[in-house]
Length: 439
Ligand code: PMP
Image (cartoon, rainbow, N blue to C red; front, side, top):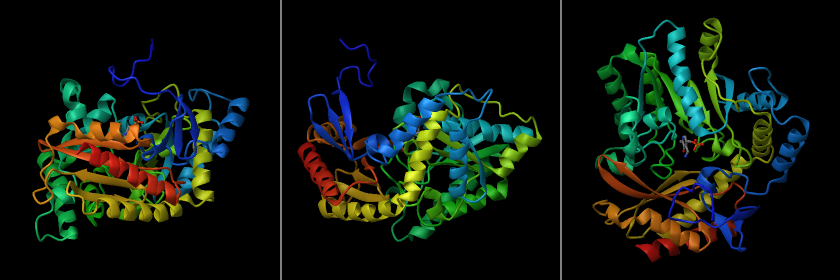
């Protein structure tokens, strides 16, 4: 009998024993094509020797040193490399162990910034519906995924949630994409004014929404207007690129494509590529400077921040992305994946929307294309597609989201950047079979 506390207590998943490029292999020898990189994690596939060698070398030299006493060469090197490629104005790196730790740290840093600046009345956070920022209490409070929040309501912080930028559901007939983007961004200004501008500390958003909406990109101009609004009211902009960052969308940071830079940026997943648990919160010189000039101490921390072995893995991953020009590859393979998806699903009666950027692609399923009516949640479509695909040897990430009380089924695809053309075909073929077997 297993003593593992599994995600689902009534399921016993197969035992994964080996990684081989884009495939995972279980104890009975079955190979699974990793069409979602787990959850947008495995950008280099599962057997990248440059990363495993870097980890081995680091463990042999120095496995761990507590940041209460030391910094370390791999942590310094990773921070330097990240800053060399980071959006303009981003100057400091705080290394953590995953995505939720990065977003929690971001929320606390935003708050401490205002305290250090002598504006302690700024304590309110605005985020968006149909978003996910992690599962710890602060991060879960910021997220707008009703299903994930449902049981924990009484424990959560009071965060405002504005409508997301979600053109498939919210754009009016005849409204241009650009006009819609500006209208969607206006919701932020309205909420800042409603709360009182000098009480708002930050706005948090995913540039391309992942785990609640299946790769939902913003409308053109949306984030430029969001940046302007934040600047107008002195509100910090926190971008959560835990899923969509590290090259996944065809630029190292997703926000580059929207022409803006945040004040605080969160990354994880692709940073360690699954080889080590690592995430990072990056911030501007202005924010760091306020702490430095004030108390000189960020009132935060975990045992494993700045972990040398995890940092060595992150450094090897980022080096691989840059030196092998994998971001260009994401653009090329992303275009091909988009074509395969349009070919297989473009006319599908139950596919309402195909969207995404790079190798971050989403499919929104609907019962009726003309009315956009979603399926009855009782059907449990997402879970059934996941199971059917898995049985056919494909890992994909179907999910159910809720927006304004409406249920939606989405499928997220986020394969490794090394995926080959024939594997893109295998992915879409197996997915189409699974969708058709279930609907
Ligand atoms: N933010 C986003 C956008 C995410 O997609 C996730 C994970 N799906 C998180 C935060 C939380 O990351 P982790 O699971 O590593 O804590």
